[in-house]
Image (cartoon, rainbow, N blue to C red; front, side, top):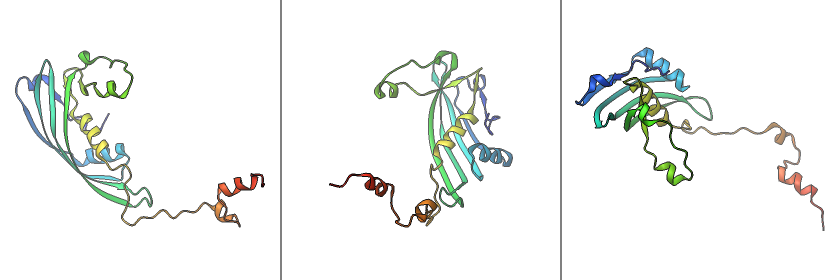
Length: 176
């Protein structure tokens, strides 16, 4: 369950009209989001979106997510601020109609399967989807400017020859 578990809409409330929404995460939601994303903090999360009927019980969920987060530098573990602005457009469909995805082989066939998020029990779990959008938009390897990785293997430093593993292999090679 995500920190935004209360962000949901009932399909019955949408019917044939387009639903336009703007949401801002509370401090408690942002603290929980940071914990779930395993980042130091989430300073802000704002989302503007619409859900509109797309025919045959399906809906189009589209909008923009803006967030300010702090991640840990992959080199120094120092805080690295990031500003996330991510547009999204996701098709939603009844879970019972989606069923299990067919087993396919090859990249071509896999990429041809439409990406449709399930609507379960008549509820559109907006928070769960937005959590996935934010998670995917985070920088994979945040790095503080000028952070350098200067670690030296103590075993290599203790080797008086300063030899690499290949130098050890060269000693095993018969001389001709």
